[in-house]
Amino acid sequence: MKEEFQARMLRIHFGESDKWNGKPLHEAIVAKCQEPGRAGAIVYRGIAGYGTSTRIRHFSHWTFSGDAPIMLSIIDTEAQIAKWIPHLDEMVQHGLIAMSTVQVIRYSGSATSASGRL
Image (cartoon, rainbow, N blue to C red; front, side, top):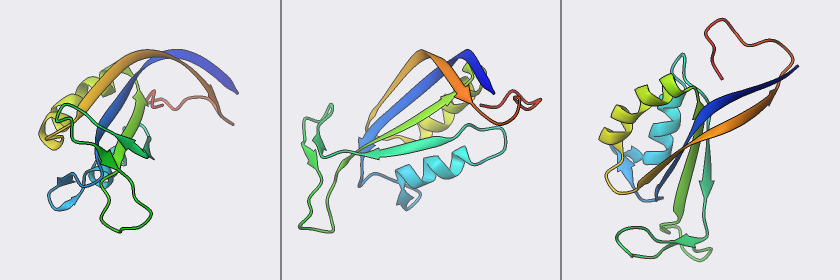
């Protein structure tokens, strides 16, 4: 089945060394995404980059303590994304969140559930 609809996309940019309650931030956000009614998430690990601090974050094959840039992407309905923002305000201490309206094409074996979940 093919569905097309409009949704919101969050792209959250931060560093690999960032934490939330002692846990890597990307793991904490993904765990929060697993709560019922939430969309999925995907984490991308970058090679190099910098943000507002202008400190270059980079991944190194030679050390176990790199601070690679991380981008986490979430696509969901506008209503669900609006519910996410207060959690992210609390969790993300240093970083950037970009939001955009996107056109989604979803391929699935069945129709959308009654909850309207992506």
